[in-house]
Image (tube, rainbow, N blue to C red; front, side, top):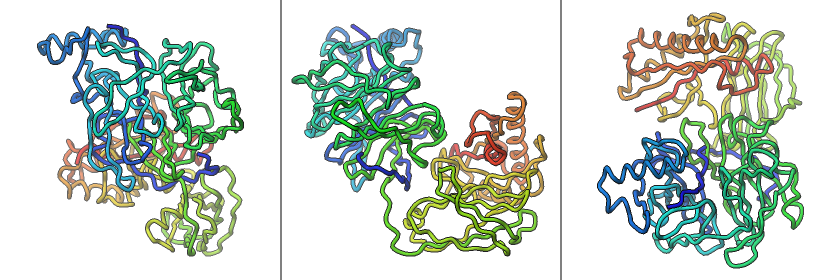
Length: 563
């Protein structure tokens, strides 16, 4: 039995992307403890396929020399054979194959109005106990590209195959041939044009520009394609470019890269094709939040309406499937923001300078000096705007207001408070998109499993883990919720900026998390319902380049681990 295979990494001709309305698909698509990756929607857009990793309830079929080992061997013999096969794949001993990242199965759900309905787990031959994943549509007739090439007698090789879905069953995958294809590549991803004349794949090749590059192949005949051609320096860099997706009109390429200049981790980019060669592209643009985040975001998939966008992200701990909308409605009525500049010590309005600009851009061209700390802002475009206020050595955190979210909630007017603090008590006040921690004051009664929540208005003595009295109102609210919900278990997570010794920073973040736990215990919360962890400076949400950005990284979060 030959073992040479691909493992999917866990992890639009539309010109301007203003994404919004992010949501993580609910259970049973996403689970709390497994990775769900690689979303692919069928051409008819009625089925969403995805890959689930390390599920012990996977399809157990394993053919070796035309024998299904799972159905013919004793349990212990099957387990030993599985360890042997997985150890061959990994080139190291694998004692628990089913918990390995090589255990990947194809799942799917029906889509009704773009919302999941039910869950389906296909059997052999589309799934077996080895890596399986649908990568892309292949034409318009319920035919799909899958990773690896298969032999009916058993064994797999690196490459790609096609399978056709007939009702709820799949045909045995048939290999496609790519001239001089490098089967020694460490990782492979692929997509196809809807007419199947073009393949776009990413692989790690010694002749490439970096860690992993994107290539194009042209159709030569039935299931036969040309030598992979590097798609060029417009797209590829010395970093890793992967998980490509070609738009339905074949004009726009979406892909993932960990190049500098993104939001952090892996980010999703897009570029427009300039000519028929597929090697000349416009400069890649990155998606703004909420699609891209400080975590790994990958596996883009856009529907034909150029609006509904699926992707994979590990922002909630494990990899999950998310959906976002890209198109924004025109403003049909006024949306007014009543801004109040508040003194953080007195809690009363105070004079200040209001500064604003388009969110996720560096420029802040808007400026207004308020003598009484009160002013009104009117949206003229459906674009998110970032606000902040200053008064000499006092400043507020940045807050982002997205008018589309207000439209979705039928809100035409709202109040925005910008609270000013001095340099000795910086506080992050940014109203975060769903890609980042939710503000605890936005609804403690609706805490979600595995949801990270920013704990605002928490103050410590400088460089110490001593909780200041100003923190007690927020901690009392948190204690009240914990006491009212006996099944709620949380983790307190401490973070710092990067100023100081890294070991000391990690210790400080751990001690601060523990100090908050002690306050909660004093208020009657059982200690076994609160875990603590400190990451020091290892998980920033902003660059540590200014005092304001450093203040964003000095934060405390809570995460729901059970409820």
